[in-house]
Image 1: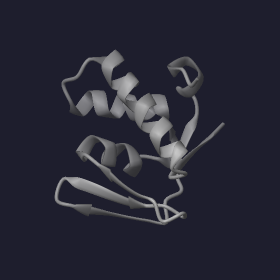
Image 2: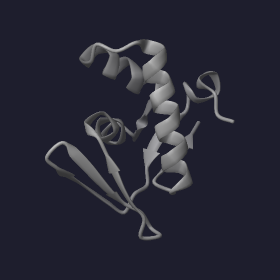
Image 3: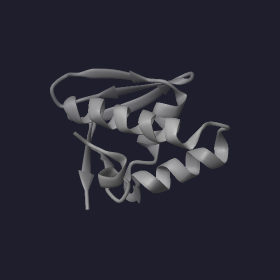
Length: 94
């Protein structure tokens, strides 16, 4: 199982075929014709998944923008990454 300690130094890479915003919803299209709908914060996480930002970098950026508990945000990022990896929409790099 992925833990924050393991994940925090990994770089997130968006490998979706296509993505677009529809108002406050990001729509991701995967290689296997999967479609995933993300809320605004989930979309921001994907937008920041540029192979430069680590999971910790992304969490820090979101903490500066939103008034949210740090542990809750970390757990939400973990859950989102698990789902997006399962759908082959993101990958992790060292």
